[in-house]
Image 1 (cartoon, one colour):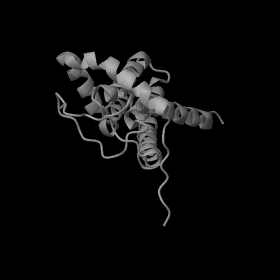
Image 2 (cartoon, rainbow, N blue to C red):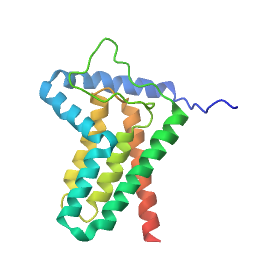
Image 3 (cartoon, rainbow, N blue to C red):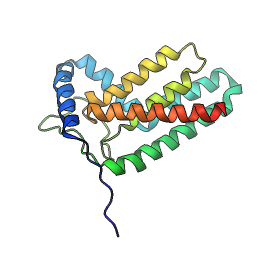
Amino acid sequence: MSEPINISLPPSVDDFDLAIDTGWEYLRSYENVNRVFYTASALGDFSLIWHMLNLARRINNPERRGSVLELSLLLGAESLLVNQGLKRLFRRSRPDMGSRTHPHKIRKPQTSSFPSGHASSAVLAASILSKGSKLAPAYKVLAALVATSRIHVRAHHASDVIAGAAVGMIFTRLINSRRST
């Protein structure tokens, strides 16, 4: 049986992540900021916030049944690709908490760190929910909040979040290109 693939990131990525985490540290000292980011992170678990918003669209417009099912299936496929595919290639360790504790409850991730599934699903869902919607700016702000929450709660390095967002963008482009053909 062959060894699993383990792709390493260059040391400059670790330097970048350390700089972002060091700069971010002052935000972690504010309780209200912690509440916002920990809540956003929890709502991003299992794409919960995106499924809730997706269902809310269906309630507001019963004719959207097909698009609601489509987004749920796409989020499932994206999760499978990121969590069972890409993360197994990189097997990157999560940020070190050291002696610190989380000020709020957080689900302990079971997969490796790179790329961020929260960021990937946030970008994908916000892109699809935004299409033709007056709420597009709100969806995009929420996606940014969910994605960056993962840095704040130390579930991901900044580069994990950037890579996850890129995966979400690529997934969205692939979907849009298939729709236009």
